[in-house]
Image (tube, rainbow, N blue to C red; front, side, top):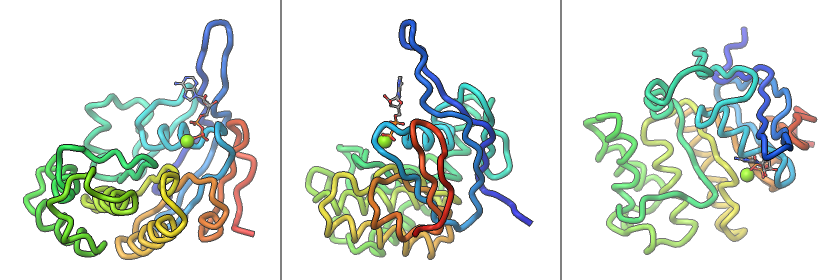
Length: 228
Ligand SMILES: Nc1ncnc2c1ncn2[C@@H]1O[C@H](COP(=O)(O)OP(=O)(O)O)[C@@H](O)[C@H]1O
Ligand SMILES: [Mg+2]
């Protein structure tokens, strides 16, 4: 029996700009099984970020519904969504989005503290050690390389032990060596923490590692398959 961690039914998103209606997502239906590593591929502008944003409840679809861990989140307001998101989802972004005034350790602790987790320090410390950045614990983001920032961001995404990780072009700002390391780390941690990973990327070599590739073209899901 299939028991998807995430489900979307007939999701569309459009924006009205003056007289023009731009259709950014067009009738997307999908389900993700627990533990799967799924890549969303597609050209720039095909709707990858918009889809991630809607699936994670950061934005609403114009049409359609989204279920997260079996719960219909489509009509929830921010007060209902924020705690659910914080508990169930970890985010990794292309531009890292670390808090500049906080140290590595504090950035990682932040989502756990929002959850009033008494073990926030311990969990963040453990993760920093796990990714080999313990000696960087007191450094702020500006004192870290791109690859180091992304490793800290990955720790932050994992600190609440989420069921799902959403990664939007996580290697887009990294050179090839750091990209490889970050992808390896994401995949290792996905296994260790037994999370579902949904990752948007242009990169063919990352897509080749996926269990499944969803391809977007002009907001439509045009392919759902295995790496070739
Ligand atoms: N807030 C918005 N208003 C109008 N158009 C938008 C908005 N957000 C995204 N778009 C448009 O939606 C399309 C898909 O964008 P996006 O989801 O960022 O694609 P991708 O991540 O694949 O590059 C683009 O054409 C973009 O211009
Ligand atoms: Mg994008």
